[in-house]
Length: 262
Image (cartoon, rainbow, N blue to C red; front, side, top):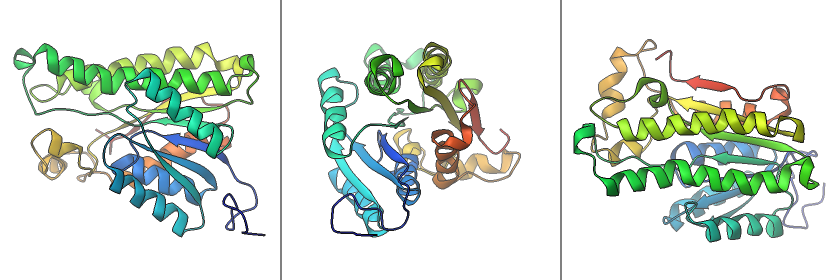
């Protein structure tokens, strides 16, 4: 196969389409971007502030023969989300997959100590962002709008089931909203060629725990888990790629708990 143009896929002859992954500079998002590149997707690595981390992920995808670009955008802002998706249209082609991965938490706290400013930040990052991005994706992929269909995978959390008492009740509540959105949107667009599913990671070895003030949280809790270990970002990425792929063609409105039995 010729590799004379930027979008050549030397490692496979049937590119899987175009996937946009929000918050893909590190952790689960980065692992998903790398795996998507290996599976033949053209990948948009979205990031908000860490340009070097996003560039590193893009370089890794390209080093394995894949196609990727990094796009800075704050997915809590309507205008920036519109620009993000327009860039994907222009640079990579028609969107076929969206992974709503961007999100955040803050320092461990009891609910009684959570203030309005923190709530606004948590809601924006974990709820507003996925809603705005899903809206843009539906406008492009829905057969109702002339699209060819596609898949949306939301990255929720086991916290949505467990509540995260004494740590992140606000984050858990936000992820509960993501679960509700997943189910509602799945039903809304089921006959428009779009599948909408979610993964609910448990304790995964990523940098998000440092944001909560306990970088070693996974190791502390791991002995109490059924599998006696924390998970790796790559294990979550495998589930996400399954839900993006034709292998899950009759699956929508579903949740995969990637939590080691927790």
